Image (cartoon, rainbow, N blue to C red):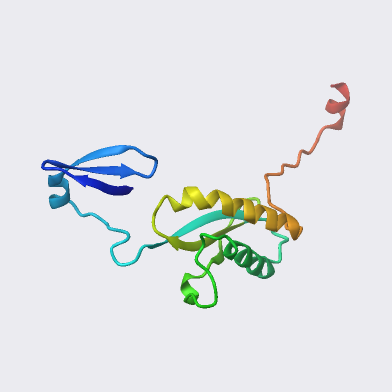
Amino acid sequence: SGFVREFKMRHAILETYDGKDILVPNETFISSLLTNWTHKDPKQRYRVDFSVAYATDVRAMVAIIKEAVAQHPQVISGPEIPFEERPDCEIDSFGDNGINMFVEFWMQGIDDGKNRVGGDLLLIILETLKAHDIAIPFPQREVRVLNEGFVSKI
């Protein structure tokens, strides 16, 4: 991903979001299907994944996380924003150790938004979960000793 910085006679220079230049032959633009993510609207939706413990009151947590994410200055939010473009938090799946969740949010442009904002949002989510005593799951294993005589010899 990136943006076209310059068109030349035989190729275009595509600049990636991490500063690399890619030379793309003009033939590629003619013979290949390209997606212009900002043709109609510069807004883009991004997603951040996280997990919570099975004991979590998920309905309450979803409301808390939506509100916390909406506070980020680069996330599009507010009552004037259409409902489908406001930050959203949903269950993704049931994992081995907890409930897998995700937050979707919109921001202006595709200026490497996930890398720029995703880390901020994960920190906000972590701080919010801790502030509300919501546990983040981690793998736990139970070890059983079946032959107690063997353990006493060690």
